Length: 166
Image 1: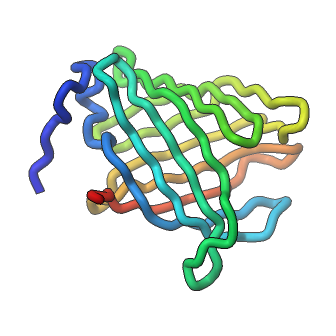
Image 2: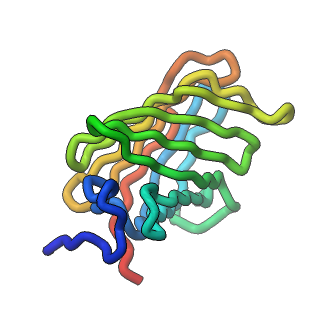
């Protein structure tokens, strides 16, 4: 399949042009303090011509047949490309957490580390995080490791998302 740069994309974002669009798939999650779970996942990267990507992610907890049990986590944010293949990302979660991330991209591989975080008084406290995004066999792979609530850094969620065209 031929890839084209989306119309109107700010030139600074050309290295991330492959992300623009909607990705939908399934994933798994676990953490020391919760039972393992499966989820449906949708991630949208869009732009408005300015030098950042708009980011939106939402999920639904699903059963073993893929049927939705309930809404899951959602997050929204902005991705900014800086010189030297540096990426700055800010994300706000529906659970009362906001985070700043800094990382690097190398072609279709993005690695981010949590730089700073804020938790609302009623939210869990996340003290560290690591995110990996990559294009693997035409699908968006996502993995998120975190340290929260006194537990050490460990795998939390991961998903594989084919590009959605409809």
